[in-house]
Image (cartoon, rainbow, N blue to C red; front, top):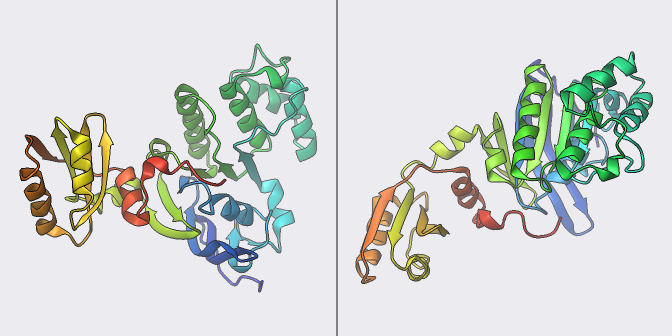
Length: 323
């Protein structure tokens, strides 16, 4: 790959242009352009197998691109990947610390590897921030899923990195632990850390300052959550009926209907971008011929609707498929 010639602006932590990666006949990442603003939580949303992990590995210098340019924190990647490593943190969804070491021992080991100055004081601060004061001697392998997640995050930031890469970090923990984890992320962003976090969970994606949606290796949408959902205004309907399953099958065949999903006892209908008023009229006409009372309401679009609109896939299955 040729050396990048981009000039990194102070407010952009990551810039990629034409980023691609091929594994034999498989095009895992296909010409992605990406800008990640500094000091924000930037989400990377997409199903498993969409290319998120491969992209992150290229951005942090662990994998060489087949094509394209990358600049991270002012450094050309992969040419200057070695200089980048001390400035970034990296956390995967699989717990990667030593399960037969205690909580504090794990942090002491990581501090030694990273050459952390005043390591005991830094470890004490992390043990307090992530609520391990009474568990610092406990073996990491005996911690709960949420506790392992907090320990992994503490380890990833022990050297106070400028940029943190998180690859599906909360897929195996309970909702309460996930909420706490995200509060920790925003504390880090408030203190100046840039965070790129990949997820296939819509409620997590909604929390991000900005989102990039990736599908089949391509970047298919980018913007703030409010901008992405706002672009679908007027295209989402909620239907209440006695037999929603029967209506769902009928509506999927109506021209201009992009998606129909059952949510509880209601149906959520997404109209295609070019459906317009005629698309809504076709839905209403189909409902009138269904032979059962139906209540139709306009509803605000959400990120699940965005995902369906830009990928053509049911977002409820976004977590399924190959890793």
